[in-house]
Length: 373
Ligand code: AMP
Image (cartoon, rainbow, N blue to C red; front, side):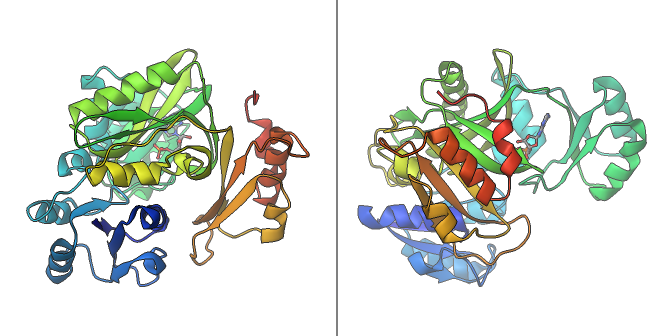
């Protein structure tokens, strides 16, 4: 099978890496000359809306997918007329605008934070009066990794936040006093079969994911599966979908969904019998899905901004580094390490995780981590 991918970053790279042993070859359409997926397939270095690039991708590929939700909808619509595109443009449109996304969550009975549409400073002032402070103002489109967001604590913060975000359409959300952040990843095949991975428990710093722990057997798993299944059916979804959740007491609130493979599922490469990347390819290529029951407890720790010394990582038993081949830059995801609960390791999982958090620059994060069974 030949898979065309819009985007050439680390998610495209890991998809192509998973595709190799399956006999799947990849072509990436990405305007970034440094696209880190390049070593794993052909790279069309053009703008997403370049007609010649789109033509070449559609001519070559059997099926087309994308690695992030900020690809232009028009580009996906053009390609969809030529080749199957999964997830569909409907799924893309449902997730790229935070207001549309939250309206859908509510319509399907998924609880969310309180929210208001904000199209002007007056809307923001009214919205803040209605839902109260603290609250978070987010741009409706193009936000990721905490970008395009401002936390509002005092009424004097409103005007500056509105100006900082550039007077663009926004959504104002109440600040959720969550106990845990979870995500669930599921895959749905072309014939509607669905598999779920165990929830991941996620920890962010400055809006950027730093740590994901696999939580097989978590008490919230059945509810998380029920919520994502509603979305999968509603969107007649094909591929991997991720749903980010806030847990408050024993309730789950939907924060956002990603119509693609997700950073909180990177541990599935080593710790699940079929990784999220393989299952995404299986789903979009019309193959049956692979099993997801994890082999062992695992965690993903991200390398943000810079790569730690490799020796410091490999000194930790059960730690498997992934380096994406991207230039180091503050705030950028340049790699990750999977930590496995290797039987017979000289130190317990939790202690090894603490060491990895130390060498990846978030030494105090282990104080936040809830007990590891
Ligand atoms: P997002 O881009 O919406 O995933 O936001 C990035 C991170 O900001 C989330 O993972 C949370 O840690 C935090 N965050 C976003 N929205 C809220 C909210 N309404 N209440 C509390 N924390 C939030």
